[in-house]
Length: 93
Image 1 (cartoon, rainbow, N blue to C red):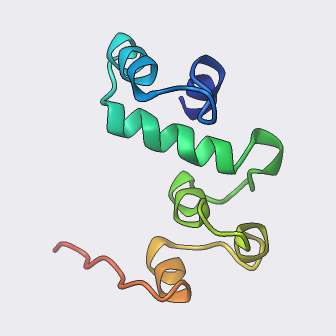
Image 2: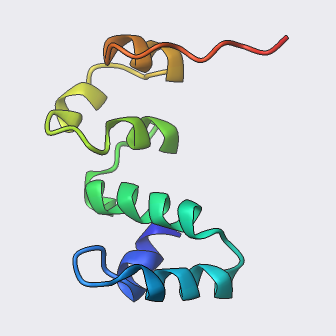
């Protein structure tokens, strides 16, 4: 969805209105589509790392050193959060 959003409403060219309209047309919230587009822009298809989750790509999307970090190991959400100095999410029982 993020790749498609970048084609229809490139992040560096579009105001929110066009992306909001597109989100409504495809049945997503603006916030969800905006986040998909942000991650897709940070990780063009050729740079995505197979075996790593979308969430891992999302966690690293805003970092300059993302390609170095993602290649270190197969990350879980909490392991990567710890590596980035973030609090892990508690596991619901």
